[in-house]
Length: 262
Image 1 (cartoon, one colour):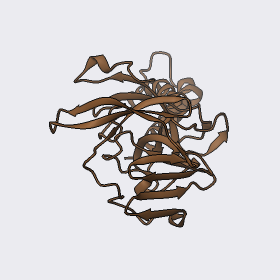
Image 2: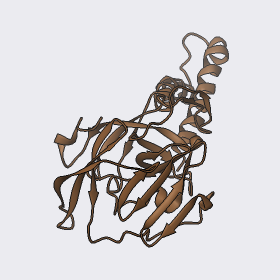
Image 3: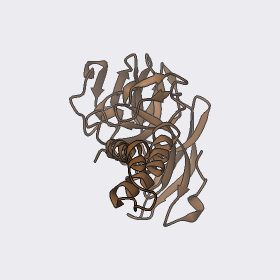
């Protein structure tokens, strides 16, 4: 469901009703005549829809985490807020950037339209910037020939399936965060699509190596063995960017999660 398009259509329709009532109908009916219900409802909803559309399109948008690909940073059921302007002002619905502001930085948690199906929103961490060479061999990440610093940080218990993963503390650029590594999971990429510019990637039994094209980003989930990401479906073009995730505002199962991510 294209919710931004539905919201835009509702805004236009209610705006037309409000305009018709304000500039035409109101002047033609007597002071004692009741306002037609369809005009009254349309005019009443227009300001509300306009504010919601403006906030959601240009300031902040809420999302719900549907999968465990970003564990332990984000859990299933987390409701998050996404900054819509930090990477530039974009026209709603068509998502075209009209005012550039900042570029995504390594380590950012970013929401984007899934390249293989733009009707779906995905959330992953920015690992590779345009021009970077990303290697993920033997379950170890290297960027431009430099191994990414990690150190053991205990274990993570998956309560839904009662098994544990090794937890590692990783630093990408200036961003520090935890990732998960299942030592029993294979090093090679188990699923790979036939994505655009796939010739920029090389797959082996040890993992994958990719050179990020200009205007694109390489994304990975923090749950490294439980994430279907750029290792399998390729690069995220700039025009697919939605915004930067920055805050957990609710979780029905665990209120302590509120505000735990920034």
